[in-house]
Length: 113
Image (tube, rainbow, N blue to C red):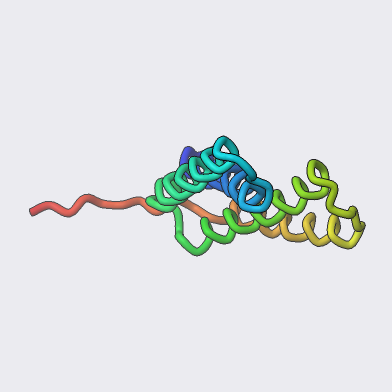
C-alpha cells in the first residue's frame, strides 16, 4: 500500500477520535486528546492529498470517518444497533475501497527555472 493512502487512512482514524471526543469529552485530558486528534487529522489529510487526487482522497477519508464514527458509537458508546445502519455502512465502505483501488497517484514534475 502506498504511503499517501496510509496518511488518508490514519487521518480517518484521527477523525473518528475527534468526532467522538467532541461529543464525549468532559475534562481537560479528554479535550486535550480531542484537540491533538483534530490537528493530527488535518496534518495527515494534507500530507495524503499531496500526491493523490483531492476529490478521491477526501471521499475515502470522509467515508471511512463516517463509517468508523457510526461503528464506534454503536460498539463503544451504546448507540442502538440497527441492521440497516450496518448494511449502509458496508455499502459506503465498499465504495471507499473501490475508489482507492481505481485511483492512481499523480506524478509531480518539478519546475525548473
